[in-house]
Image (cartoon, rainbow, N blue to C red; front, side, top):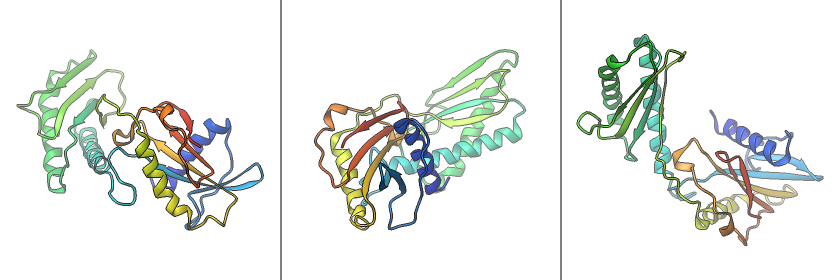
Length: 243
């Protein structure tokens, strides 16, 4: 999915929740903002940005996001291999440690996980629901915390996905301010071109590196040149207005 497609999906989902219905909007090219729409007679621009746990906007990218992309790529390769080579349908959840997986390690790690799955699925009883938990340090690759294999006669396809940690951190005020200040620099380039300017901060429930719990009482009185600032939690389907 391209950046514009992600922005379109995020804004459409946000708008349905915020306005209660779909709205028309444009996705212009730079220097204009990500989204442009009309509201209350004003031509309004909206910048969209995802908040990550460990990045510094404009300075340092998210290590967690990069590692999750590698993990997802490994999961897709395993899913493809299993679909082509194993005549039953499985659901497999892989819990990785948050350690950098180097490019030179990807192929070997993929093969190790496939071998681990192959060596354990012989225990599956085809007429029943099965759950196999593999968490022994003696057999797991160093990058994995555990691996779960599920089987049910009702499954109609094989799915391999990563699972994240159960602990979700709070979204701190300082991280919000850092993202706002970074986007304000971009706003200066087109401030005279539109009537009103919004900033939409996204939290993604399906991305471990961008999942937070909101602490709404801590987000008051944040100053900004944006006319409106909102946080949209896709996990909670909740919108918090900061300004």
